[in-house]
Image (cartoon, rainbow, N blue to C red):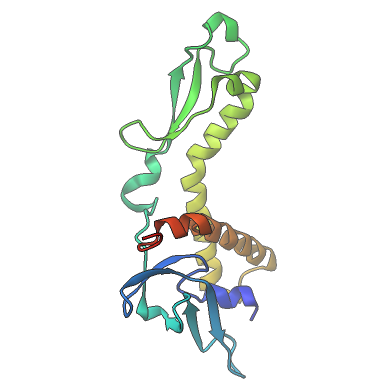
Amino acid sequence: MSHWEAMAKTVYQRNQKVWVDSVGAWATIERIVPVWAKGFDEPVRVTYDVGLGREFQAHELRPEDKVDPSVDGVASHWRILRARNKWQQESDCQHHPFPGTYPVVVTDPNDWGGWRTPGAEYDRDPRKIEYQARLIACAPRLHDLARQLLELVADHPEDAPPALTVLARQASAIERFLHEMPAAAAAATSPGVGD
């Protein structure tokens, strides 16, 4: 079994924020420690180093609550709206795909929050910005596809074709990146830091 397959067996990921029940504090997974035994294809135990002086087992930790895009149709809230172009007349931007408007990706059911682009950037390459807007609006559905791929490979590792395993490995790396808290941001949001 590869190192990647062993890490797929873990409950938590490196740099993930967790609540340590026995200490009563938030911590960040610094290191995942698999314990291997001869004759076994997977680790017999996995512990987590969170920088508190000893390693913890998964049942001693609790993950930070996260917004799951698949719950309550959150992903369906991500959509493109057209905003009126205030900086140019419609006649001045006939080369735009939708003259007189520009895309705004909203990620909230109330049509606010999300992504916008500066007008000058949109005017410079409107087709590129339109593509980015569609890509961002599709991101939750693409993320869901990647998670389904990971589950498929994890449920049937011996039956997965090598090319699919490589794709699952790449999807796993992207998933970890999505959930990582940058070190500076993690330190700033940890209780007691700078008190």
